[in-house]
Structure formats: C-alpha cells, structure tokens
Image (cartoon, rainbow, N blue to C red):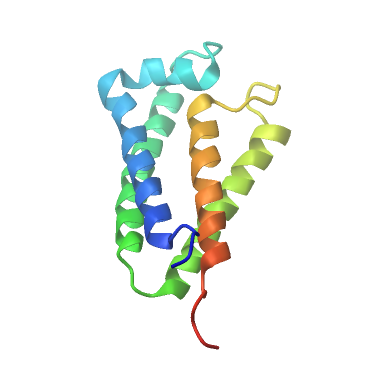
Length: 135
C-alpha cells in the first residue's frame, strides 16, 4: 500500500476545515471576523457584512463539495478537483502577496492554516495518484 495521502483523505480534511471556518461567524459574529481577518485595522460595514455572509455560504458549499468528492470513485474527477482547489490557493496567495487589501502583504492565520494543511495533502494525493494501476 502507498504511503501517499489518498484523495479521499485530502477532501475529508478540506471538508472539516471548511466546516470549522463556518463556526466563527455563527459563534462570534461578523464584527469579530472583520477584526480577525484585518488584524484589527478594519471595522464592519454593510459591504463587509455582505462579503462575509457570501464567504460563509462558500464555506458551507466547500464542505459539502469536499464530502462528495471524498466518496467519489472516479480518481480523474478527484484529481482535477484537487488541482482546481490548488489553483484557487495559488491565486489567493498571489492576491495576498501582490494585491493585499491593507497595502502590506499579510496572510490571516485562518488562511495560512487552510493553505498550509490542504495544499500539501492535495500535493501528496496527486503524487500518489495512478500508483499501482496498469497503463
């Protein structure tokens, strides 16, 4: 058996993190979320409230999608989905580095945790995909 991480495991972890990201909005509210993501430099506004609500819905959708992908039996679907998630993370890193909202590159701790855990898991799953299968 391979030592690599399976796509199923990578998607289950991604689903768990996405579900965890839903909790702060429900527990502390959007005002506190704005403080966390802006390191206390921003205050809530109707526009930020709207964006955070959309982000919450996106996290619910991610959790559901990742749970479905974890049980998916088609490795090609899992592979391309993992690559899509990785592409999104690369895009997020680019924006945080070169187009930061505060003008100074800074990665909010939840974003660093998400990328720091899921990107390596997807990488390992991709490295192990197709192993043991005949061409």
